[in-house]
Amino acid sequence: MTTVAIINTIIVWLFIIGGLAFCFSKLGKGGGWED
Amino acid sequence: MEVKRERWSSRSLFIFAAIGSAIGLGNVWRFPYMCYEYGGGAFLFAWIVGLIILGIPWLMMEIGLGKYFQKGAPGVFAGIGKKWEWVGWWPVFVAFLIVSYYTVVMAWSLRYAVDSITMAWGKGAAAAEGAADYFFGNILEVSSGPTELGGQVWLTLLMLAIIWIIMYVVMFKGARVLGKVAFWTVLIPWALLVIIFIRGITLPGAVDGLNYYLSTDFSVLADGGVWFAAFSQVAFSLSVGMAGMYAYGSFMAKKSDVNNNAAIVTFSDSATAFFAGFAVFSVVGFFMNALSISAGEVTASGLGLAFITFPAAISMMPALNGLIGVAFFLCLFFLGIDSAFFLAHGGVAAPLRDKLGWSLKKSTIIVCVAGFLLGMLFTTKAGVYWLDMVDRAVSFYGLLITGIISCLLVGWVFGARKLREYLNETSDFKFGAWWDWVIKLVLPIAMTFVVIYGGFMVDIPNAYEGYQVGPFNGSHILWLILGVTLILSFVLGRMATKAPKEEE
Image (cartoon, rainbow over all chains, first blue to last red):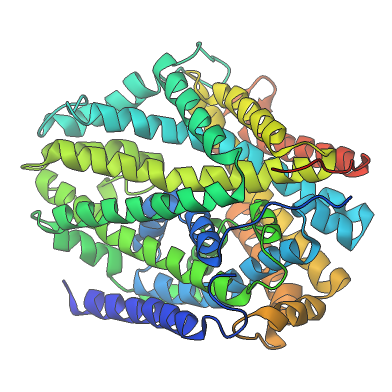
């Protein structure tokens, strides 16, 4: 893969995984996982 | 006596059901192509901006209003003001029309899954020619135009009947069963995508395909096209503007989180779309390599990608053709079925129950029978023409225009701040005042831009796709579909609401 393609891949996965990690770190702060 | 509303049995099952509704065929056949077509990295940048400032707030708004009013879309807007109830009915018609043809595309997928076992469209290089003929000749048995219906394609009709029976069996038990089914119908397509990706990436030319998918041309950011592509992708992918999210929100308990759920759904949908691009473009790269053709010569989106390019590429693979064929078309089927549940159950059946007082079983059977009967238009030999026109009318114009009106009403009449404060009370994290302005201004402006740039500027000066039905051209048909559904929305909005019966 080209460098540009690799950089794009890393940035987008960082955004998605980072976003999900943030969401899961906040789970339960407002009510709990199983309600 | 107040009737107990159906409920998700747990938060995780709601999340799976909402993710299942969001991930659909577009994740496979729209997102990767848009990324390739609109500058790769530049598109991804605009898409990420769109997800944060449009996608999550819009999803929050729909789920949150459903939870607030404990009603489907029409009940929500009737709650804002009786005169606005029609605003909630319009997306119900959007949902009904979409599910009626979406299930037909799923029926084609099932036929292809069966036909993959023998590679019925040809093997080796011959399949490159044979795949298109097979799709138009054997699967669609396509006629010469929309007015020449030509009778039913019986095998597709049989598959359609099976799909609606499956949908009835899952839907008539309500949200509890729907959530449990969604757990599997979200995980299975992911597993199948992984299998397709692993096979794709081991083929010669796969890396070239990925380079096309992820190349970057930042100069396009100054052009409206990339922003149109990114914003429309966000709107179409998250299943907003189709009434169902209001109902899904209404099945939540009053203390449930909305903000975090909306964000999880958005990121999960994004992950699916981005990963699907790797599976799709590795196979497209192999196909280009095998035929020594350029990316511009390959149909890499929509029906053409799914039912012509992919079958041809699968036939040309050196091994595991049948397995990958079955995996790919079952993947399409499973991607579609959650979205179909969502449209039929949340988008149509729940509002009908709220309005007409029908039981869960009655509303489900009526929606399933009506969806099947309307679907019979799309299983005729002219079905693909009608599918194309109805799709453009409702899943582009209908979805976006109802979205614009909804945001303006919620933002300026109900009060974006009031809704945000309500959502923040029970959510895992809070949104600030910027969210209010997204609902009041940014979303309506962005969606208006998409409607004008990608819609009116194309469809008003030109007859849509050159179709002609009697005195009407393709664009007239689009306006006719929108006009009729709008009038029906007003009629339903004026009708009296009956008290609901016991749900379960």
